[in-house]
Image (cartoon, rainbow, N blue to C red; front, side, top):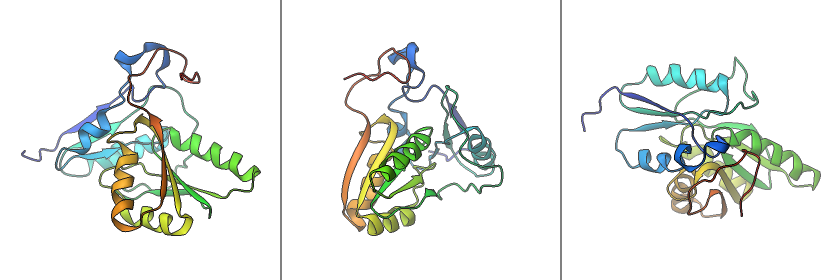
Length: 197
């Protein structure tokens, strides 16, 4: 209520913590944090971006939720890459489909774009490191350019980053969307690479 200058660092996000199972897998907190007025949400994609996000969070007044994973992830950003709260980063340009991801799923989105390129599909990849405040401009521009969006997140598909993107798209430029994330269920124990049907 008081818009206090509180910074919250949440770890063990998503299912990549693997064997620890549902009790240690945060799959719902982006949705919970999104509904709080004044709250900003940052989901960095690698260690370098996490450092920049931490510094940026410290520099803004008001509450910030910084979502961090536990597992090692490849470094896909550079020391000199810019980071601004509320401004997404286009990691790869493309014309046929836009893949919007956050957290370490940005790396997976880039890998998927490489696979799609082998099939002649040009995928644009966006690192939406700040689901709130959301970068409406880059989402709208991407929707208009590619006419199709796939959101990818290590979070429930209800209320998370994909839902935030859909809220922008449906109001400004409705296009075909697909949501990749955790369906209406809790996580399970297993290695991060394993898949449960």
